Structures are given as C-alpha cells and as structure tokens.
Length: 335
Image 1: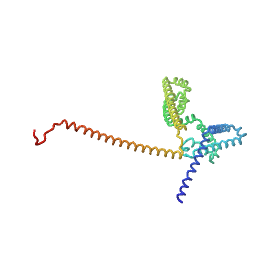
Image 2: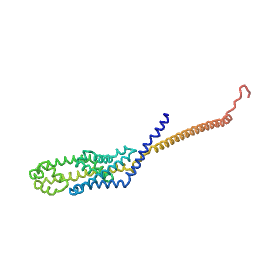
Image 3: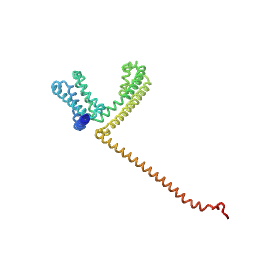
C-alpha cells in the first residue's frame, strides 16, 4: 500500500508544475505579442494626456466624471498587464524579480491601491506621472538612455564636485577684484557663483569682459581661463562620461536582449538531455575500453613477432657459426 501511495504521490507532483508551465506559456504568448505592447503603450500615452487635461480647471469642472472613469480604466489596464506579466513568469518567478523594470511597474501599480496614496491628490498625480516613464519598456533606445543616465551618476557626481570647486575658486577671485566695482554680480560669493554659472553657457560673456576691462586688463586673463576650463574642459569631460555610460548601457541592453538570452529548458527536455549525455558517456567508455584492448592485443602480437624474429635469427646464425669455426681433434686421437 505504501508503494502504491508513493507512486500516486509522485504521479501527482508534476501536475501543478505542468499547469504553471502551461499558464506561463499562454500568458507569455500574450505579453510578447505586438498588439499587447501597442495597447499598453497607447494607454500610457492616454494617461499622460489625461494628466495634461486635468491642468485646465474648466475642462475638469465639465468632464470630471468622465475623467475619473478614464483614470480608473487606465489603472485597470495597468493592473491586468502586470498580472499577465506575473503569470508569464509562473514557471520561473525569479526571472520576474530580477528585472528592475518589472519591479518599477509593480511598484507604480501597487502604490495606486494604497489608502494613503489614494487620499493624497498630489502624491497620486506624481504617481500617475511616473507611469509615463513606463514608455521606456516599449522604446529600447529610450531605455538605453535612461540606463546610461543612471550609470553615469557616479562620474557626474565627481564632475559636479570638480565644477563646484572651480566655481568657488573663481567666485572668490571675482569677489576680490570686481566686488567693489560690480556689486550686482560679484557683491558676494553667492552672486559671484550665480554669475559665473550663467557665464558657463557663454551667454553674456562679452558684456562681462567689457565690464572687467574697465576695472583691470588682467580681467581678460580671468575670463579667458574660466571659459577655457569651465566651458570647454569640464563640459567635454561630462560629455565623455555620458558617452561612455551610453556605450556600456547599449552593451548591457544587447547582452540582456531576448535574442541572446538562453531559452528556459523544460524538465522533460532536461531529463532527456541528461539521458543522452549518460548514453554518450557510456559509449565513450566502451570505445575507450575497446581501444585499450586492441592496443594491448597489438602490443602482445608485436612482442610475439619480435620474439619469433629473434629466434629465427638465432637459428639462422648457428650453422654458419659452426661451419666457420676450426675443428679440433678429439683428445687421445692420433694425427
């Protein structure tokens, strides 16, 4: 009885797994379809348009009921979408949690159902605005740019630190030289930093140079060195950091693309593959034993031939050696 119950138990175990695989296969066929992506993308754009329409108080007063229904419809579509994506990973749920875009989509949808968020209009609008960023899922180039911006943050922080240090040094120098003659722009360190930050775009640099030349001719060296360092060197360094991060993001997107991602192997296929590997190993072992046996047999035959050849050579040499030796008389015989 115990054996039969174990057999029934083992036979019943694969049923939920096969059901999950079947569910994942069906949902994956829906989520990977082109019409599904276009539908969700259209709803995201409609959600963004609704946010823009709500900024007009007259339209909100006239169409408040319909706008609320449209918002609920968008939320329902997003909820169904995230549920389908979860079901598409029913056979491999870890893959869903490894994708940061899935986590972002899930957080955006779940937060809309929290009581605290739904009661706060400002937070709810910001949350609805975050849905617009979901367009990056359906636009690979936009996703690459966002990933590049995120990867360039460490280098950008270093750039901002160097830029802040440069602005502070030049602001102090500008306050020393131009604080008395031009208090509107260099009356304090804060005003000097703001003025130099605006001059970083080379906007108004001509007026600043002319005003500085009225104070001292050395102001030309001051502005020339600042423009060279701030507008040319630092900006080019920032562009280099962003371009490097963009290339890294493009390589990361290429490596994680579905075309280069290995397809999941079903348990049955894995079992058949393991059986084939075991059969191949047994065949290799049999072949190795056959080769070793044949090699030993060939060596034994070669050794026997060498022994026979040496024996034949010894028999061939003995008559000649006896014929070539002088015969000695037997002892006691006469001449």
